[in-house]
Length: 231
Image 1 (cartoon, rainbow, N blue to C red):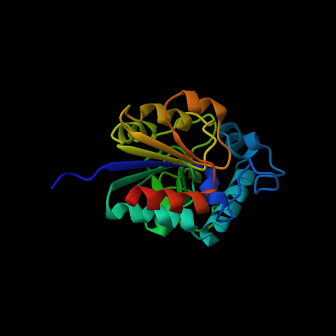
Image 2 (tube, one colour):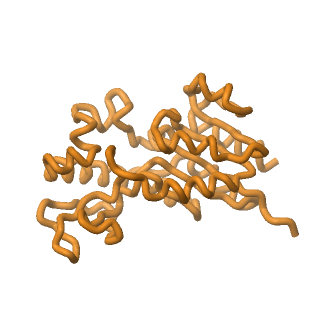
């Protein structure tokens, strides 16, 4: 029996937005009224920890209530025929809720907290809030296990290695302008088939390499693409 082909999927905010999780890039979204650098940067954390904790408590509660959409659910079907790895830029757990077995979170997870002095001390808290004064075993303030602007992306090298093994690469709901995640497309092997599902297609990527473009939202485009791939 020949080994299963590997499909590597890169997802961004677009797939979560259809489950009601808006981002700071959306007009009228959850981040509206908040300065991005105040609530999504290491400088913001150092300046006002309580504000940051309140903001992420709100996001955590919202994510806990969200349900996977048809885009998330369709991706799980690929596991019947392929070796599938999902690399997501999203900090929610909608892929896991849908049933995806192998998910790499580039930017961390809302449902986790970590020590502010030791990145290896990570705790699962679900939808519970974090308060000022909540500390890790070492006595330091707990913080969201989310990668902020100005911080390294710990899972990036692992994601690169996985992308380099792709026979098929599927990019969903991402603008491909946030680095370093946007550079992962360049790690897909020359022989791999690349698909992009997004209602807005960045003009520059067409010249980079052959990309099969489906200019649709994830909830409709992904199920159609999965049906095509599996047939």
